[in-house]
Amino acid sequence: MPKYWARAPIGMANAAAVSDISRNGFLHRPVTKKELKKPDAHGLFFGLREELKMTAVMAAMEMAPATRERNNRAVEQQREIKRQREEAAKAEVLRKGQDEYIECLQYHQMWQTEQCWRTEAEVRAGVKALKFKTYKETALKNNILMRWKGQGWPDCHVAWSKDGKKKSIADLQRALIRIIKDTKGWKLRDKPPSKVPQRKESAVLGTVTHKAIELAAKRAAMEDEFDSEARKRWREQDNNGERSTHQILNTVGRRKLDQSFEKKRIEVLTSFDIFDENKIKIGTELRWCGGVVKKVSDGTDRVPNGRTRCYKENEAAKIEWDPVEELDAPACTTWEVLKETKWNKNCEGAWRIDFGVIDYGIKD
Image (cartoon, rainbow, N blue to C red):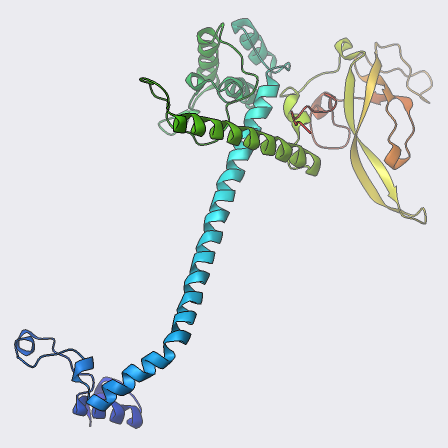
């Protein structure tokens, strides 16, 4: 049996071609030390017959323009693919930077709300008022992040765990109290620091060069553009429902209705029936409706159509609703039961403080 049958099953025609090339020495080239020492040692091309060398050169000259064009197209395609990948990676980095900056902007806005604890007494009272561990942990983390991300104070950074174990409520509370004491009197920022890459600040010796001034101006322009685009993205995400700044700005945990809500604006997540052009009901839709609390029940306010039954103290609120024009809902005044368990939730009957139109800081 031939050797090529013992090694691999190949066709006889192919085997004959390999055998002929090997016999004629078309593909022979010196590779061993002994062959390379011979005076007539030469490469593969110079080992060909004269007519084959001429044929190869003429074919290469004839095919050169088409080959060059094909290679140039392949190189351009590779460069285009590389450019697209670099742009996609750059856009992804920019998107992540904008999302992180938006989070910083939200924590910066939270500083002006009731969630912000500014003294040690407020921290202790606030933690004590929250019933569940999850609410306490979230409130403490939010207050730390207001200072670290919202105000851009790097010294306020706190790790949430140590040696793979989550820190306790007491540890977070001590850390927040320490931060409040250390940052007392610190100047508040108008906005968080941007996430635009920048060179490391160093001492300046002598006169600043024009190039350094030019780079500083270019970076300032980049910061302004980054800030503007991030704020627009923030507004777009709020409008699309990807984020809810109203929900973030309201306090964590449960909140019971009381007399302090009178004359304040609140929102209630209300269900509306949706009809088609033929006035046939096709479904329901939840929508936040805003209004002013005119009165909170004190135990003497009667339930509509409830004969002699009255609302319990702090059980319901008399709300003067704003009209909802797109749903043909006129302005009206009704009594609504506002449950403590539905404070700042995302279900029918949920309620929260209405902060009005969010100021995204966009300069149109």
